[in-house]
Image 1: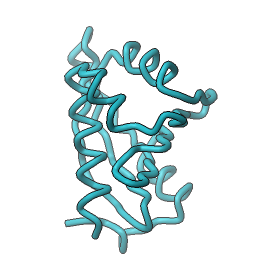
Image 2: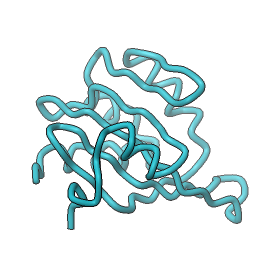
Image 3: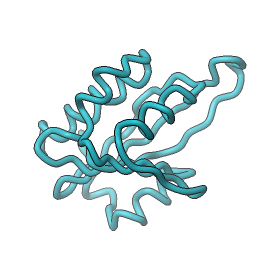
Length: 124
């Protein structure tokens, strides 16, 4: 297990959840890639724009790790409708304690499949 990469992703989530954009940016590479099934964007300006549109609190669930890639199960609770709760996942690439990419998936199974991870990579 690499505590450094996992710690970076957890700090990244904390900064996102508290809207601490300066910390979020400092934990991200200058050319960070942010993506999901609808498209992708790159760079700090794109990250800042994306983070300002996140309208949910994010609770980290299970964490998977292998070779600089961290997959995190996420529980998203809408800021406007607390009954709107979804479980998704995100795959992060971390290099030198900076998130270089994050890709959101509809669910944990999709994130694990996209990163070739399995239950063997689950961190306890």
